[in-house]
Length: 210
Image 1 (cartoon, rainbow, N blue to C red):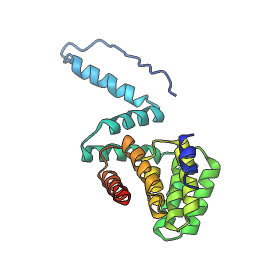
Image 2 (cartoon, rainbow, N blue to C red):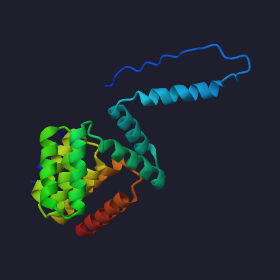
Image 3 (cartoon, rainbow, N blue to C red):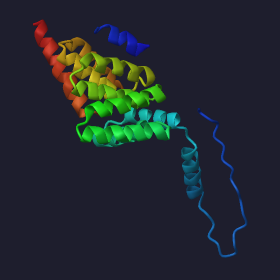
Image 4 (cartoon, helix red, strand yellow):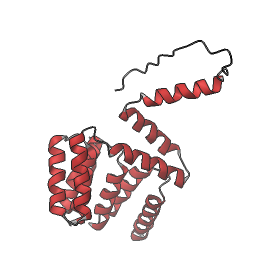
């Protein structure tokens, strides 16, 4: 996996079908416009998209968008999709995690995340949340290990890539941190913070060579 190789340097779509029903209009009914009919069909198609198909569409939009505010809105939609594990039990554990973190009960939060990961190891956001919590607790190796799992499941997870870049920077691996930000910006090019971080690191590395 690309994420596994990168870390080693530092230590369905169901077929869409739409049934269009036609009914005789009342004598005084207004004829629907072709534009409205087309819009309704598009809405019906969107409603039948799988979560993965919807994410693929959002990531394509995010990659094309150059307006920072519009890109932020798309990124928020992506995060919203990530927050739904598809399991009511895992979703509840994630809610308990958030509440425990708010109450500064980090040990309980970690326990909830461990349970969520055990129940659904293919759910990237539980790994990502645990990576964030481990980072906050100063457990950098554990955080990086969790980030590895996130990126194996979802290589486009820009949140995990920013966490990776932060850990690499703090450990003095500026060259690898720069590569992490480059990967981030390939996915989310309009993000201002990532642009600034990349420029700062590039200038720092250029200065160290002179």
